[in-house]
Length: 404
Image (cartoon, rainbow, N blue to C red; front, side, top):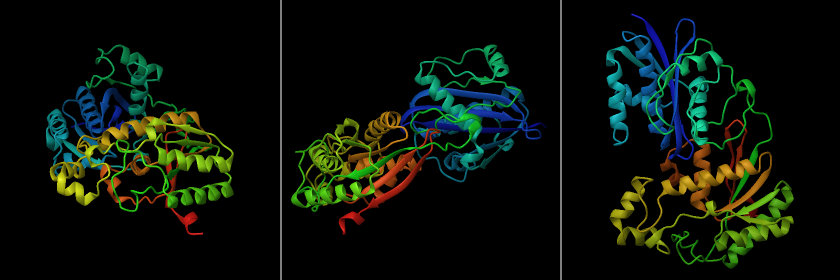
């Protein structure tokens, strides 16, 4: 019985956001590329894209050898463990996808193996090519000439956004640039998959100084009274301005439109001799009816809404904005700013949720990690974004400038 290797990947630029998948079928003896599949699937989560990549890879393998045994290699721990039967499938979006994957081959002919992301670059590249093509309103096609000729002979798999897999045989390995990683800002990549050694766009992330609500730990988002800095907050802004002036690295200042951020940003910008640019995408979550309340007060008044909010990023505060919605606009702002400030160091003055979201996305951490990060008033964090799509968290919640 013939054996085939399937490597699959999927990604979402925003999670959820514009998403795509890629899969490649390999000869295990020679490493030869036997088939490729990639598709832009519209707005979806990373997990949905990963599962769709798996299904496309299995179908491509089935087209090549219906009686084969298949070794699936993926960097998604969730998909590997769920399809291996070691983890339960609880999310309603995952169950039908897992069932569809299980129907392609008999379960006893498929073995799942987790691999690190750096060993899954071929499928990752295909997923990003599909997302890039979808962003242009095009269907993905292989870059390699021979692969493109084979793909042209296949029936179309539907318009961009259709989840149907389009398998394309390619008998030669593709030599192509590595596109941006899933969830990262789009930018040109260095040739032949080489690591990007250029100067990154570095975001220094400054949470605004204290307001009257900060010491009382009250919800203060974008839907309330828009409080300005307290006296303590103004002292904190002055302290961080001196610290950043001493470092001498900030080239631009960008701020949330809310008063507490603009006041903090203006204090820093005046010290650095820079202007402040307002970015709407950096505003805080709209907490709706919870604005101005403490956690305990919300728990007492809106217990069911609070439980739902803590359990799912798609659940919104009463009359407010969910973390999923915030993630989409913060990721869009990140992409705009990273493209506009490639190779520069930019101060972003924002709030707890947007800053934690930028850190979470850079780390590839799950949404629940937002509840596991501390972010003090007037604290500094930093994330660097490289042209090849990689991100590096350089600093988190530094408050040393406030203790001098």
